[in-house]
Image 1: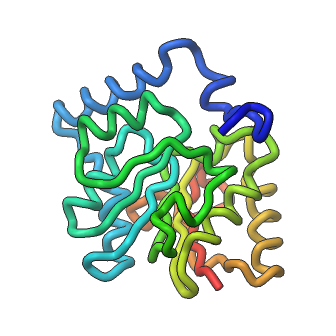
Image 2: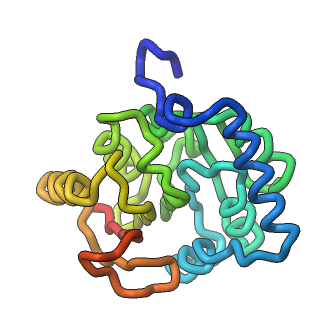
Length: 206
């Protein structure tokens, strides 16, 4: 990625120096304390056959990618932050990792063949470059086989309000790209309401 081809994600522009390493150390500490960090993996694992091909889009330091690989899936983890990708390779070996801006995601980035499911967790959507959110959603759908799923989870945030998110999803549905299949308020299947501060949305592609 070059700055000329795409604007820089908020992950870089709206955070302090050292934020990436702080993020890495935070989750290392949580893991060492025995925190339950596998909620997203349980959710995703239940939606696919054993040995599925999965893209962890915005994989961060590899927590989810590593858990899904341990559950028997073939996982590609992509993130725009090289610091996080290096930590993922060290802490959670097994998946294939790469430094990729999701606004420029292509089929070649997942091995040249569509995956069965994309998961985009960890508030990735609110850390994208402003104005690229709809493009990212379309890109995620474009690397999934017909009938596969895209699962997106992020917090309510002014950077990408749920109202604009839903408008973008409606556009994708009208274009026949993907449709909303389910929505929850947590990775533990709590029902979503207008007051929910988090949304886990399951899209069916094609």
